[in-house]
Image 1 (cartoon, one colour):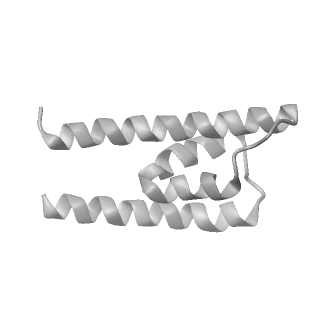
Image 2: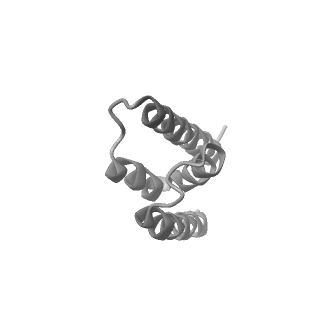
Length: 91
């Protein structure tokens, strides 16, 4: 197996973790427990986690009305696409 496959598996695992993180935060919100900070949730999107974030927002209907998320998550998707294309071009 080459490095590209390892990288893709790592990205898949990372995005799955982030998806679960959004579900956990939604669950904590419903139960009134201590939550994951918005800064952490947004930052993970910029570190190649935008796919997990997008699915987390859509599936759990979480953070859909917050202006920070409505503005920064699409930006994170664009940044992730740019990084992905840049890395692919270097290979």
